[in-house]
Image (cartoon, rainbow over all chains, first blue to last red; front, side):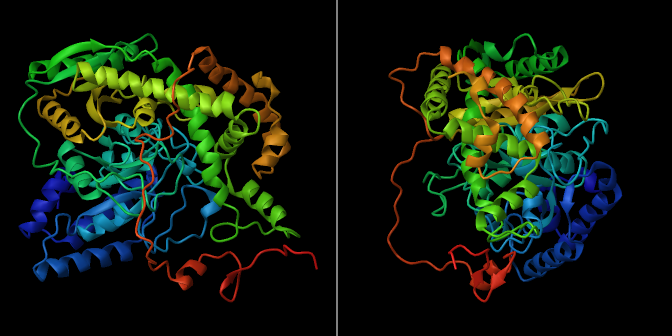
Length: 481
Length: 96
């Protein structure tokens, strides 16, 4: 079977028409991993026997008349989401040996829809990073250029999809961690609106910002997976009780009647000229499809990265307090006379440098005397950033921007300059701060062959518009370089 | 409240993190640079602006007060780094 030509949509069709079985499909994915992942390093864990057993169950269910949407479709899962019985390391030494005792809600829903969980993908430790170089376990290379990073933090998922080793994957996005690696590797990445998808079973990084979303080869595949994943969950009180439309069925048509805004603060000096050119061409394609293009302003954009790193680090310092060596994961073997010594030794050995740096930063901005000056102040600036988007969306239906100011970086280029690494996230953190949804769609490559992503941003809970725009653009896209 | 005030060793203690000397030196150099950058927020007048604590504000989500089954204790304890019968074993907490 030709795995390269398959998407989630065509795999569903092929399975339904009995052109191939789930075992054959899953075998093809496993063979692709064996053939290519030694070089790419997208996966942290694959259990062939377990994956084939799940596939055989799906085939048996189909033989018995079952026909759930994703029955027998293998997926790759970022190693930060709990899948019962599988490891979940968060690419950290502190979760060595942990096996998930339950399914995250998104996993339970995908399982109910018949999906096969084929393997677990690499990430920056606890999703803290933009290159996947902060993984404590291994390096992941960009399939489009092996000397470059895949982006991050969902770099393993992006590399697996773009590298032909997964039909689709799940990622998580706290400040761009789905959209930016999708852009760097050349696949589609969707960050849903805050409250659209349950985070129950996601190892929390920054709870007011985290979202889980699909990383796929096509916009239609993203729509299919979001339709399964979205909706209210009693286990995550931040999920909203809003109807989940049939996103995939609503795709099609053109962009007539839509006003698309270009935020002038996103097209500025510092933006790589080749990235700017690809994005401008994508904007012109949308115009030709009937969209009206208008310029808008998001005046507080320059404050977004500072706001994000205060809030995300503060929340991380609280969330990561649970890793203490008591109930699961790593516990230091150094003899400890008191629990405090055990915590100190365990956390010193278990956390990597970037995680420690952010815990220290987050603890500082929450500490007595600094809380209002940093944390509450940043929360107020967050309100200004949210209002920027509310005003912009009164003038247009969605925004078109670059995903990242640059194409994929050389491995090592951003190491040991944390502030420089943080500034990479300038165009993506705003959507998390505002709670809106965002999509990264490939829009060609640089002359050197590096993928570039177009970001589409839409108001909260308007994933339908987001996907429609992405899908129409994808159909007319002329891949240039 | 200048950013260079950060005392990394003290904050690490608050965070229950033991740093190596090298890490402490590195962070003591890097964190003031990051804090100086985030200080740009100070120039914004936010008086009268409500803080946003969540991407999509939701308040007081309640459910019926009915017990639900939790995780099976055996499966939970299977992850314990050290176990004593049905408990997590830790260093002594109370004075003997």
